[in-house]
Length: 138
Image (cartoon, rainbow, N blue to C red):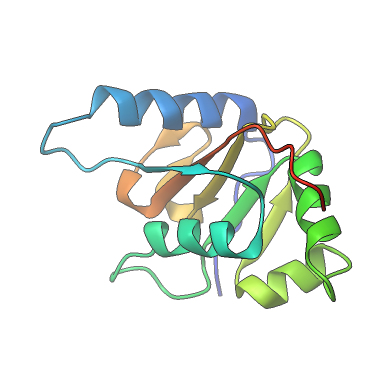
């Protein structure tokens, strides 16, 4: 059974730490968060993020997608047959958590054991999507 993310986590701070950690580790041999630029919030971009966070020592399906309400709504508006977060979880095969504190320009995919509050314990089990200006029609 997958662990849950700490309900007290400051997701705005976690997103900032994830982005900073990756910048500081650039070019080093240390394990680091995977960062991907996303053109839009769609099924294929979320699946790319999930693949980036998967690790051979983590159980499949244990990852959690954390996004803002605006990004969840964008996804639900674009994908036919997906009406709510429960449907989205079924399609992605993992948990989805909508957090009001998450910045609209960031989507995280994280294994619950990879973070402790805002501390990054296993950066290789975290992927961060940086959402570009999403002006396309639904």
